[in-house]
Amino acid sequence: MNRKIDHWDGRHVWLIGASSGIGAALASLLLEQGAHVALSARTLAPLEAGCGGRARALALALDVTDHASVLRARDELCECWPRIDLVLVLAGGYNDMRADSFDLAAANRLIDLNLRGVFNCLDAVLPVLLKQGAGGLGIVASVAGYGGLPKALVYGPTKAALINLSESLYLDLQPRGIDVYQINPGFVDTPLTAANDFNMPALMTADAAAWELLRGVERGQFHIHFPKRFTNSLRLARLLPYRLYFWLVRKVTGL
Image (tube, rainbow, N blue to C red; front, side, top):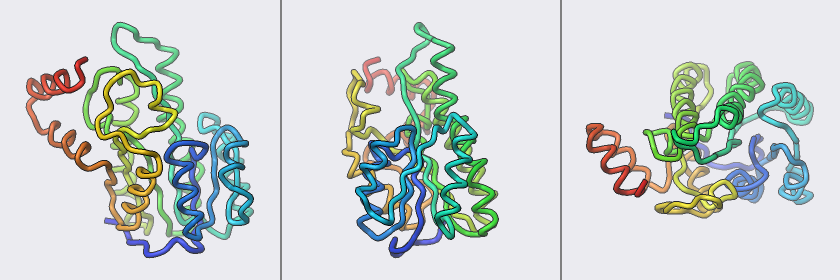
């Protein structure tokens, strides 16, 4: 559904959310393969550590919830690079929330980070990609967006919205020469999941997840999801009648 990529040497990739987890692992992988990589997140120190003093790496601090800071980072990047070949928006957060512990302030903070933050990034990068008439845009959602899950009262809906958003973006941008990637990881061993107090089936390392993500982009896939044995089971579960789906989720999670 997208163009295949046979090498990364000389390509310019902007990773938004690259201070830890999949983003940091992906930055290392891309730099090893010869790409120019811009690493962005709120805190500069881990980004600079990820650059490792390499000339092809650039650390750009930004806060996706602060529209002005995203635009400033975009402008600085465009001054340094001749083009942007790929933007991957990986920034996001998670918190446990159920109906009996609903917290509106916490819900709004997560919506600002996971959803409005992505729209802030779109406002910054879409004009660049459209002017180029080329490039790619990937949004990291989650398998939690496939269907309702316990403890994901706010997190799940934000990720479901990103799945819908990436589908709409594909319809608009693919005819304009811009590739779009919908990326849905399962459980990945990152600082985001470290505090989870429930079973996480098919837990992956960040390095393994970064490899799967990159392979999906190289193959030109629109829907990139991993690990398949887990993600495909969730996709199949969504085909069940609600009575069976709810029973299965309760049985598997114990929640």
